[in-house]
Image 1 (cartoon, helix red, strand yellow):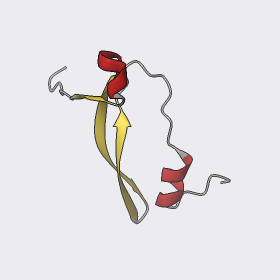
Image 2 (cartoon, one colour):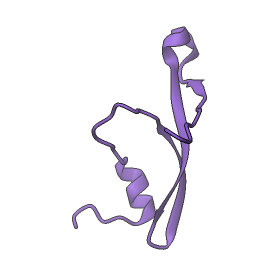
Image 3 (cartoon, one colour):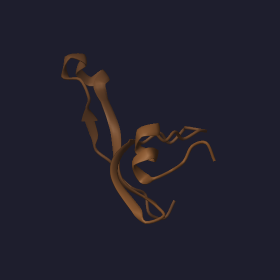
Amino acid sequence: MSNPGRYSFVSSDSSLGEASFKPFLPLTLNYREKSQEVIGLLDTGAMVNVLPYQIGAELGAVWEE
């Protein structure tokens, strides 16, 4: 890997202590003429990525197509 990235681990629930820390990745999603700033969970071992319905709808995606 020539340009490795470093991402901060952020606590999502302080009552869980260290178990709540997750690596979040700031993203800008673009679809057609719309853009949406979001924060994604960085999972380097994932085989599937999921876009929440609400974010897709805000970008103008039509799920039925």
